[in-house]
Image (cartoon, rainbow, N blue to C red):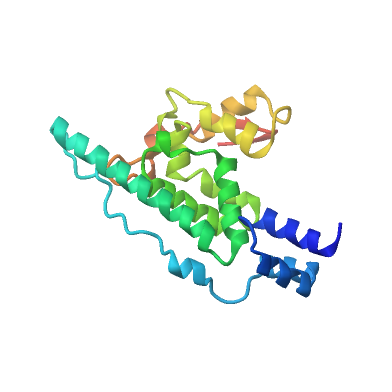
Length: 232
């Protein structure tokens, strides 16, 4: 493969489609320099500055009381839908505009890896917060990234973690964590999943603030063995 083809392939894989001028510049700089520029971009990202994170305002459901009328609930649902449309359009613009394409491609990649959908989460705020986790941890050590994701409200809601209690363990989050997100089939046992579910009990999502909080009364503090390690 010629150097130009290698550079073009690199930029396609690490971004969302290079211009001819960008391929020219990468070819002139050389493949090693092009990789370095992607991994350690110089200066601020002007494209990011042109596409700031939108200000959404409060979650429309947060202000609803227990006695909210059907009309008020419908209005809140419509407002939340509009917020979701806003961040969807913003994210598309950000991916196109960003100069530091590798970071945006990684955010897109991790969005697919952690497989969380707004169709169930139904909250622009939670999906935006999850993106911030991707941006903060997505280029570093995987272990702290996983820990951060296990406290991510969107993922917890997506995999029913808020329903996981010591009296009624829900295995969805523990199973997907092992099967899809980290270890892969064949590298854990059903007992690991059951113990993992118990270890993840206690975390819930505040209905008003949509923030994750730990409730000790819901946590299973009994001894557990996961992947050969025993603890509480």
